[in-house]
Amino acid sequence: MTEQTVAEKEEKKGRLEEPTPKLILTSSPHVLGEYSIERIMWSVVLALMPGALAGLYFFGWSALQVIVVCIASALGAEALFQKISGQRMTIRDGSAAVTGLLLALTLPPGSPWWLSVIGGFFAIMICKQLYGGLGYNPFNPAIMARVFLLIAFPLQMTRWPVPHPIFSGIDAKTGATPLGDLQVARLTGKGIGKAVELNLWDAFIGNIGGSIGEVSALALLIGAAYLIYKQYITWHIPLSMIGTVMVFSGIFWMMNPDKYANPLFHLLTGGLIIGAFFMATDMVTCPVTLKGQLIFGFGCGLITVIIRMWGGYPEGVSFAIVLMNIATPLIDMYTRPVRYGAKRVEGAS
Image 1 (cartoon, rainbow, N blue to C red):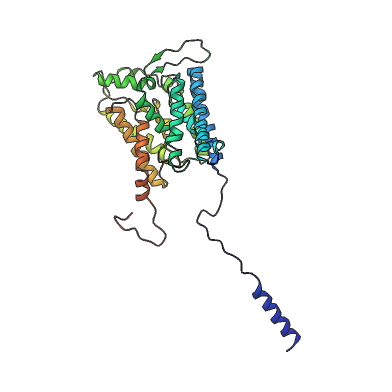
Image 2: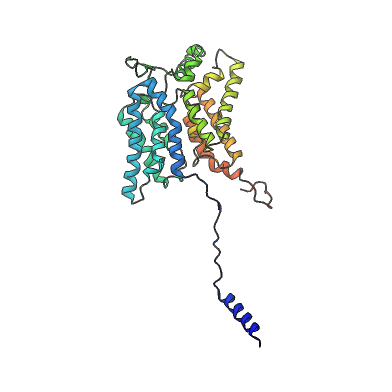
């Protein structure tokens, strides 16, 4: 045997004795992006700032009190629950701050401090943590808390101060919201009442009665544009929800303008814009597929129109989103894409 043959055998033996590389199998996704829970949540807080600042301008210090107490209550509720249950503290990820801020923006300016505290604790403890925390809640916590407060404390939830800019020195006075006026006119058989007198420019900038963060369409659209630009939300749910409200309200308005308000009235009053862009688009509680999101938005818009026109409440956005949150698993099941190479079986989930 030659020296070359011996050397080749030794080299081959050495290669065989080398450890075989381990292959680690993981599920998708395999590429990590720049997004994180903290980045997304604090970006949502930033996007809500224009709406919050508009609320502070038009309603003064009474709005600031509600915002501070709601955020503090949400953060405190999350910290308390996680401390008691022995979980890792997550108040820095921004999710509780988003819930508290969103809840505050849906409350009347000057709401009692205890109402904000109850809402913050209910949103976090009942609607989020009891289901397992962020990512497991079936309902948007802020929306669910608002619905609870509206049902449990209707008097405090329907006292609406008229706008009194913070530097005006005018004391706050209560009055009806445009949607409230519309409902009163409908129930008393007076057509659309004061809705026909609504100044659309005032409604666009926020100089109308309503919740702290729902009044200024301009401020909300600025924040929504930022979220779409950062690709944290897509256009599918907002467009289908707002478009559905506009189309159906427009149809009835054209049929009988003396009985039904015009589409711009429905767009610029109430919580349609903040609901469509900041609440219905919640990543945890809305459908995953784009087709499902269009269906979800359509359902939210349709229920909103039905409640506004014929329901017992003047506003239907919150109820619409909660009801469609219930339908999200079903929507996901029937809009789930077929795996490559497989065939869809009719009637199968």
